[in-house]
Amino acid sequence: MDCNKRPENMQRITTIELANAFIDEQVELIRKQVGDKKVLLALSGGVDSSVVAALLIKAIGKQLVSVHVNHGLMRKGESEQVIEVFRNQLDANLVYIDATDRYLEKLKGVVAPETKRKIIGAEFIRIFEEEARKLEGIEFLAQGTIYPDIIESDGVKAHHNVGGLPEDLQFELVEPVKLLYKDEVRVVGYALGLPKAMVDRQPFPGPGLGVRCLGAITRDRLEALREADAILREEFDNCGLAKKVWQYFIAVPDMKSVGVKDGKRYEGWPAIIRAVNTIDAMSATVEEIPYEVLHKITDRITHEVEGINRVLYDLTPKPIGTIEWE
Ligand code: XMP
Image 1 (cartoon, rainbow, N blue to C red):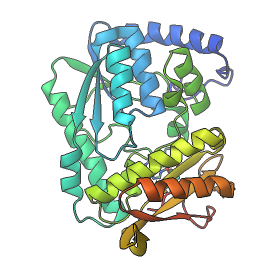
Image 2: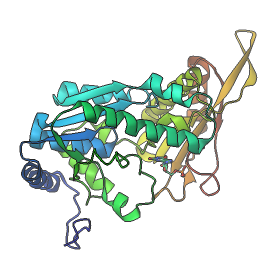
Image 3: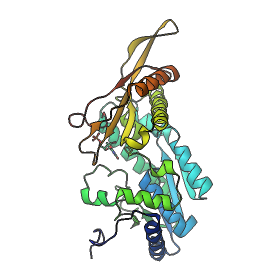
Image 4: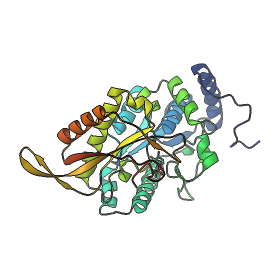
């Protein structure tokens, strides 16, 4: 039997009861596979790796070592949430690495989007490798591979999973959700008691805010982007759009325009709102955000975020625009 093929008769996990049955079965399988050995997991805080972490914690507790690398390109509050949920609430064996300085140093002056992506991906492997070498007795690597990753294998998520580790650092894989679709992973996440904000998270590119801070990344523009993005999310939560829109975020280009603040000339960057709906991310339509909401967001971002003096709304569907700006 091909263990990477979802059996025809496998029931779709749509209820907590079905999720609990899946969890019991996986806990059993994980214990059998791992025995008393240790497992390493790269915990990004995204839905898939979070669910895998929670599942493994249930199965083998502190034999799981989760490594969360904060590349400094996370959305506001996301690394804090990983620490709160996994270290404080689930008492996990969590290694937290703040690699912000290291990433920003490597990315200094780098403009080309694909180069930025490569640097971010390669640095992740390097940091993960360093941590893996520090730890003793690890024989397994857990990954949040899900079924679309297997059937599409189009490379979009390639850097999420820790492919690319050197030859002498190879582990046996533990991939408990690899036959599940995203909606099923979410139901399992709920059944495991993970917070809604974590389980319902929108898709977030592995390179994170790195591909939304357009052009060469600087600390101040990255910080402005993070704050503006947090305001957008807060306002979408307040007006109910958060539940409806598939993906929404801010991008900040590397250009300034003239504005006026407190009676003085104020040069600032524009914050560009992107809010799209899609089934498979191959094509996307733009959400019709009510003007009232747009005005509120504009007002808050221009008043609350240092360095931003305009707010624009991107009305371009995919195609011809991609969802991300780079
Ligand atoms: P585009 O911009 O190609 O994005 O229309 C389609 C979907 O993929 C996400 N995306 C990425 N996800 N690593 C990821 O894990 C990446 O490098 C990457 N680039 C784009 C994007 O957020 C959207 O959901």
